[in-house]
Length: 139
Image (tube, rainbow, N blue to C red; front, top):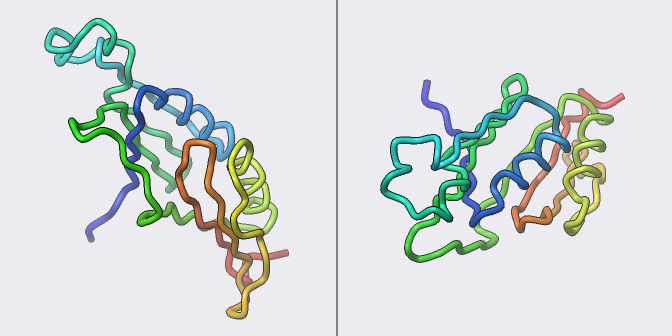
């Protein structure tokens, strides 16, 4: 079966962002800088410390990111959100609190008409998150 993973692009603050996400969500993080890659010789000295690729993993959660911005530059918008489904009410409330630090809680966590605990936020890096836990998972 096909699988879609989330891949975020940053402009020099990938390490800071991925460390923030690890602190907010838990898990293990891996970084590869441009200087550690075969691309090193093709890039300017100022690019050597930028992140070519990083991966945050925790169970079935995988979040990948890079500082490799194309010529058009980094463009953020509201067309894409990261949907994070929690395993319990406590977990999703913790994630919501942690991810909203320095950002904006745009939709508080609340019980929806379909019976789930649901909310939304924009984190301090401008990424949009939707958080949900099904009613059967709530204590």
